[in-house]
Picture 1: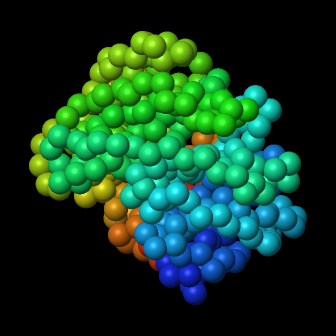
Picture 2: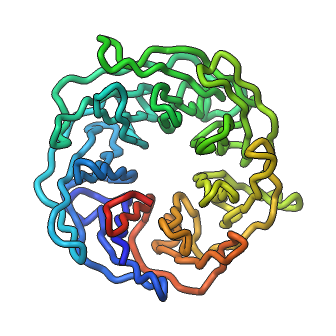
Picture 3: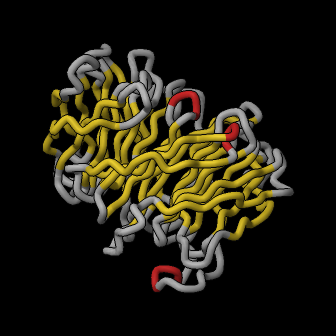
Length: 358
């Protein structure tokens, strides 16, 4: 079975992180435990080498990052002692881990900072007291939500030498060189300017070809970019809507996942309440829309695909539930009508039996 950890919006006195088990045959979920003590643990990241589950505390008044040790046997990966560090800005909304030049670190995007943070990790996965941050300046061109910068995620490239930050407020992706031995471990390189009013939110790299894909929240689109390894040349080669052409009601795109063998790309729509599916063609250079699959999970903020590519698990923030879909042999999610009640879920992290994040 897979262990599934769910982040959510919840007050600190109530369980906000939920541990469930996924049956690989039926796709059904079984509850194991909840973890309280963190306000709005809305995004989670797993570090396999350290057996640590990292969580944001998405707060304006007490923004923090928590490190929780995962121990026990595979049937009950119990959460043990936690450590926390304050972030440099409010509303931390995304975190990821990186190993670069022999240094392990945690990268954090603070939506209301507007800053990005670098937290070095010790050999056991604890956060080092040292912290470095970089401030985003400026504003966007159209949306009221672009009155200031809003870093929304921070993603490392396949070489782990660069960190890219989609900034919803700036309609841009900021590129940083990772220099872990330097006093400034995140060194600004360039800014990739996207379409006006697009609101880039999240991105994913093709695993072996020089392309990456960005989900734009405000105009509900997906952009395909070509890049050179040092990012001195970056070119947008395609931009597609994540919605059916005849849909004109309010919607914002949310999450993006590249499927196994990089053959399918999935994007969630909040408002239309669906998962858009694209075929990845021409070695990653082009996306073709295949279908848009409706979800019971209202406001599908986040989702993930299991490591065996058999199941897609959706966090329906607006419906207080998780929805599990099967993925058929064409890479298309198939609704099963199966849901599991969880209050205000916002993030899904899947850990396989070898403790790898899915």
